[in-house]
Length: 252
Image (tube, rainbow, N blue to C red; front, top):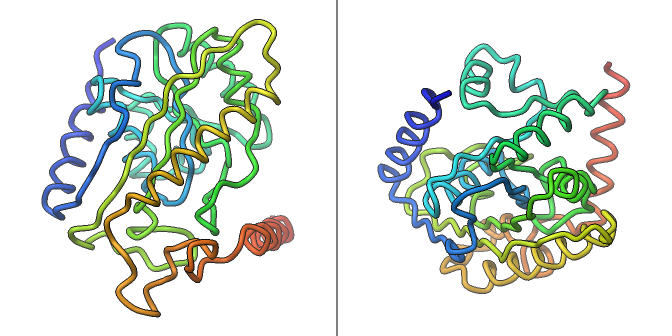
């Protein structure tokens, strides 16, 4: 079945990026498989990451990524029809097996499936702990993992900060690593460690090469504490995530 919704959405996003004069850099485009299934695995620092991760695959090989996203997005009156039209995969966090099975079927059919293994946005802007689902999915479908790192997207819209969707001239880095091919002997936990190591290297490269610096003391919020910024450390960010999860549980 032809994609009727995805191409216009991509076109609209590219038009918006040009209007804002975003300085988008894609490194490692040659690593995107031109055909066949693959699990695209990205870090998560912004609410817009699926747009830029998907752009990395599309600009590199015209691949349209089917992202796994929480079902709340699919229930929204505006985003829901778009998500379904683009054939993204709805994840019910109380029972993720149907979404997992759908993702494996898509991979076996030659699709690129996008996964954020940290599950939620990283408040520290460093990599959080990874879930093993991406590695298990790749093993079950017998397709490679495609590591990716994004940097700069947090300056547009991230957790705990006002969104700035009209911010102009913002550099955005999309780094794509070499595919990780699995063998029958590979265990998901060990593969996930390899994947995280590859993504750590990509993220550090993107951070080192990033052309912008904070404009002043109040503009250091988007930098990790380890790089002299005022973002919370990974330990503090984890505690904040746990507190937020507890509040949600109490309100449920």
